[in-house]
Image 1 (cartoon, rainbow, N blue to C red):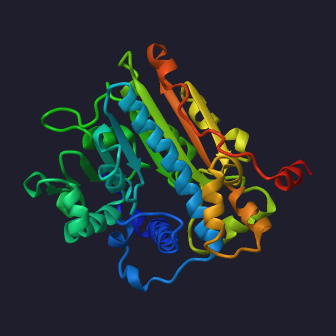
Image 2 (image 1 turned 180 degrees about the vertical axis):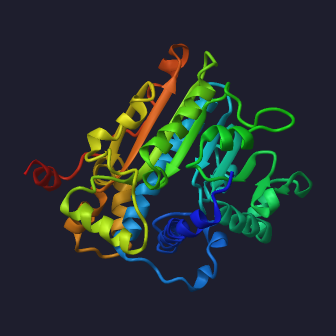
Amino acid sequence: MFPPAHSQDADSSIRLTDTDASLARLSAVQKRYLEDPYIKHLVPRSHLQPPRPPLINIGTFVRATAIDDLVFQWLQRSTDLGTRCQIVSLGAGSDTRFWRIATGAHKVALAAYVELDFPEITSKKAMAIRKSRDLSAVLGNPADVTVAHGGTGLHSPTYHLFPADLRLPPADTLGTLLASPSGALLSPALPTLLLFECVLVYMTPTASSALLQWFVDYFSPEGSAVLGSIVYEMFRLQDSFGRVMVENLRARHVSLPGAAPYPDVHSLPGRFLALGFTAARALTLKEIRKSYIPRTELERISQLELIDEIEELDLVLDHYAITWGLFVSPAVAVAWGEWGLRVKAAPPVDEDEEDEE
């Protein structure tokens, strides 16, 4: 289940990217781009952390707003159809999504929330949850919460934290982890959403395809199967800006074996379509910022910090994308076919003209 010791050492740079992400989210919260009362409990000495630059804050806002939109749509659609749903966050790191859902308007829609990551990450998270009253209270009755896997896992009636190396054969990891004495933890009969935030890009295409295929096979037998997936990651790394990104990461001993098959945004949906997903679509963060976030929100965040490097911002956002895919049986295709990001506001005229040029 766990990688050999030398692999864990080699993976330390990848694990540190979770620190980058949690500090970026903390900064965006402190600067009022986002609301998240839980992230401070998962960042050591959060009150002493300096803010991130405006470019990072805006990128974090766009990423979080779009993924929240897709997740909340999933929860709402499940409720509208009279069913509960499951969410599996792979490479979850210090994400707080479970707590935000469990204390929000969609909490009744959640049947199970599963998080998986390296044991070094999950052990820190399990400890942080146990130390924080705010985090542990959301899990429910303390008598129903158990520590597992030698302190690297945690289980409650709804929330489950597992240690796992997602690059290993899924049958050897997921098949064991998601089974329990009383039955499978995930029900193939419930709509299930997979989240991959900067995860698959660190895996080989063969390993990431095997991981997705395992879930497709797991949910296929049910005639009413509904499986959704959201991937957020960098791409288009073959151009000059992308090569600089790759070199900067290489200097930190981080490689991106999963980026090679995706030279442009049009190639990203192929990850899902090649595995039999019913539909898939991808948008860059640049496109999402301009057209898929309410104009009132964009106007609000424009007042938070001054930013002159709009061209630089667009260049960065154009190398990150959110891709979502849907795997459904014909019996329920119509009910789920509208799930996805929708245009909220037309981009300003000058930005349209710049794109055309």
